Amino acid sequence: MIKHIVMWKLKDHAEGADRAANARKMKELLEACAGIVPGILKLEVGLAQPGLEATYDVVLYSEFASREALDAYQEHPQHQALKPFFGAVREGRQCMDYEV
Image (cartoon, rainbow, N blue to C red; front, side):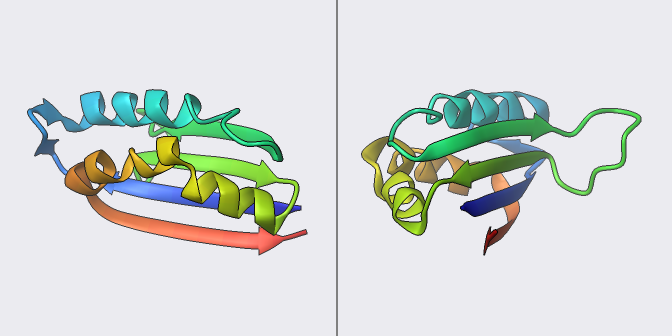
């Protein structure tokens, strides 16, 4: 199994919206990818919440049955379509994949 974790820090304003609105849109877009390829075991999106420690605004936690399933997800047109918006609204991004 491969775990795929990505965190984004967002710009204060981008694409005509503020950070909170863009975070909500990112969450919606990512959650819509939950079943786009076989082998996605889990896909969870979290947003920074007031009163809880957070150095990033959006986090994706996902699990894939195999490296091939992760590759299929990353190459899927629906996932690829997210990249222009995510690139426009993000200030920073961190990613880690690991096998268990």
